[in-house]
Amino acid sequence: MNEMTGTIETIESHGKLSLCQIKVGGAICHVLVIDRPETVTYLREGIAVSLIVKETQVVLSLTPLSKSSMMNCFEVSISNLERGKLFTRVHMSLQGFSVTALILTRSVTHMPLEIGTEAYASIRSNEIMLSQR
Image (cartoon, rainbow, N blue to C red; front, side, top):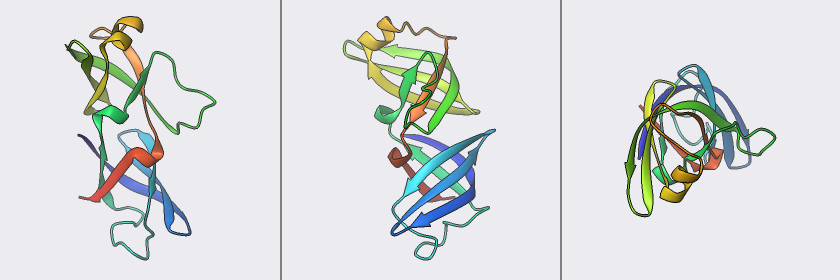
């Protein structure tokens, strides 16, 4: 699991859902939460939170995913590759946090990714879990 920390900047709620904008390093991360500020204490502007993301939910690309529904797209630098027969763990720096993606080894070869490669990591808003710090 990847964990980053940030501060809730804004919250927009409708029904049982809330869309939070969270400042992570120098970037904004959009997180969809199945809760409302009225039902949990940590959903408040200015509150420090942890963002938790599975390694399999980090999508890598060599160019930003523009004009897509993927709201979270961050510039990253590849710091290490742990190649396996089918999967490769790609370690990277994202806004000062160490983040790992688990992708097909064929994708690493096809892109190609190497240590030092500048790339983009994208994460769907509904694939990020929040917890209070």
